[in-house]
Amino acid sequence: MSPRLNRFSAVILLGMIACVLADVLLPHEGVRWAARGLLIAYVATEWRHIAGNARLMVILAAAMTTFAALSSLADPLKVVTSSLDTGAFFATFFANQFFLREAARSSKLVSRCSTFFVQQTPGRRYALLTLGGYLFGIILNLGVLSLLGIMIRQRNSLASAGGNEIIREIRERRMVLALLRGFSVTPLASPLSLSLAVLLTALPSLHWSTMLPLGIATGAIVLGLGWLVDRVTRPTHLQHLVPPFEPGRDYAALVGVTGLVLLVFLMALVFEILLGVPLSRAMLVSTPLVGLGWLARQYMDYGARTGARLVARRVVRKAAETFPAYRTEIAILSSAGFIGTLFAALVPPQVLGAVVGAPLMPPALLPILAMLAVMGPAQLGINPIVSVTILASALRNAPDLPVAPESLALALIAGWGLSVNSSPLTASAMLIGELVGKPARTIIYGWNGRFNLIAIAVVAGWLTFLALAMR
Image 1 (cartoon, rainbow, N blue to C red):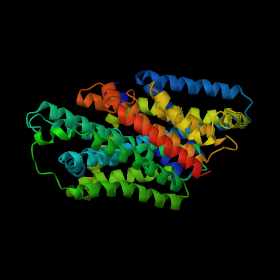
Image 2: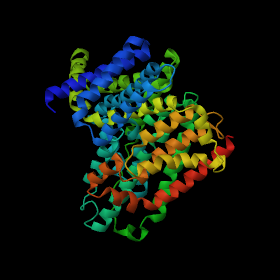
Image 3: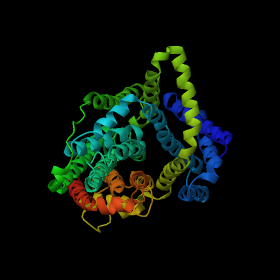
Image 4: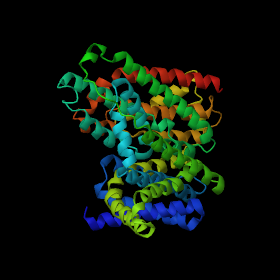
């Protein structure tokens, strides 16, 4: 695309973000219509450059719109516009992360913290990289893999391994798996995650105060299991070959990054109370505010007026460079939100009730089925956002669920998180494979295969226990 078209595309997306934020602060049908139109305009502008799977999603959404118009729905226009609203919300939730990512890109705090994670003894390094994959994943999403992946590649030189190639390869494998496993729990345990926003949007009866603690507990199980597998499989017979060095002790940087994550969350809680909106929509306000404030802090030495001008110039310039690269993700996310909402309206509740309540297995095993329904398509390259959105939207209208909806919702995002660890066709697996020069299948099936099998079994048992306990 030409620079001029990139800028035009970025302006459209920024306009949609502004309209969605305006609707959160001062709800109005006019700004909703503007957001709907800008979403369609953005996808149309980027159509030639989005990936094939995203095009298929958009085509499916258009086909379902036609079907809805010809169906016996009482008010098809209302259903379609509501579906567009969901699509615009998902697109905005994803694009809003730009403000945090851009601030983190030039932050000395992030640089210090990532260096601290890598410069550790092997056991401590695994634990801190896992924590880093999780914490930075909350702020940077996939960007954490680039940030820490590059750091791993730079720090894990042959010289740092004492000239021993075997030590270098083992160190690389342990660090990569720590990073991947830490990142994989962000769908489960992040208050800023898209997965939580999807669930709270598709299932309004759920509340973050229930889902987030359950997700954090499940994420802790996965992280603890990863640490245990690493400890059991570590090559202790080679420990004497590792060169001695002084580990980093910059805990202040870790506290600073943790504080930023908590600030976004706590500010969203304030907006949730003041505006009377769900937490996921309150995040739309707190995320850019914290991101812009973080950027402004980096330009504070220039004075208030000059600093504000530099921040504004950087945001506009980087948005023009970055937003067009979001085209495929935004097309998939908005289409998934649209399809899920429309699907829930088109399928009769009694049909959903018959499917969910069918006596094919004990009700306590339904969460395992829901988890596998997300993980299975992910092995074929179908983004978990698609599976989770459609399944969660379908559950909204299903009457008389035989298990607590919280246990089914947790199973869906558990499947999302485990897909990050188990599918070589996810963006995270391909990106980290490219960074370390290894095929994604080698990392996922070779290096991480044993952990995946254990994690699936343990999480399945945990979900079954919760289903019985919450019944």
